[in-house]
Image 1 (cartoon, rainbow, N blue to C red):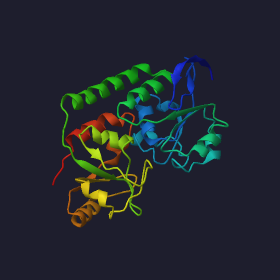
Image 2: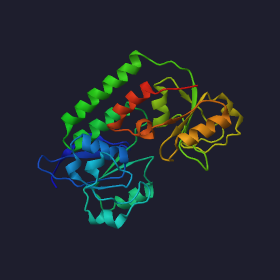
Image 3: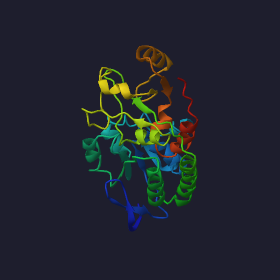
Image 4: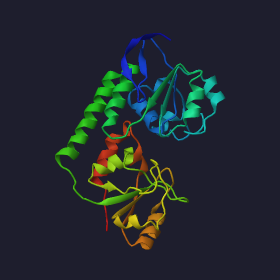
Length: 271
């Protein structure tokens, strides 16, 4: 596959990537569900040769792309057989030892790590430049800028402290430096912070006295499949508002952020 000279296109860990040649036909394996969706939005789906079982959007188009396992448990030999030229991974979602193993036979490993909705602008630009999809990337950047401007021009100053739950048994949440917490911050919500656990995705105990400061609990539909029944039972136990939220809308970066910001701005909160 022909490649142009390096042009200062740098990924999340500072690795400089080459732009594909004008006649190149890259073979991409993506281990990040939200970025698989983004690749199709950029018009790059024709080059996608492998995805995880969690890469489910766009629903009709991804069905033709072979599955290579999960985000953390991949079939290395199946990926090898696909002969990819590019691998797209994420620091939070994929295991470094697995990525290091894949890097031994995949020439180009693109590492991503958005921590704020605005970081998607860099992500769009990165993939748009590497794969010569600059125009499509520009359109997405313009759409995202417009959505972000609405929050800046018309801030929703709720002042609430929220707890976003991603797992049960054990109960787990997110730290304030995560993408999810920064999404919620755009609405004026401050995420509760564990005083004893500094992990990005810490476990917690409902008996923790500091949880008394939480005004609102959000149960995400992913990665744990919380449903309305979970929300109703927890609200009864806690005596404070608990709402079920669409995890894809609040945690998926890439092109989904544009819909996600609209969802966030119109999210109904009932006391």
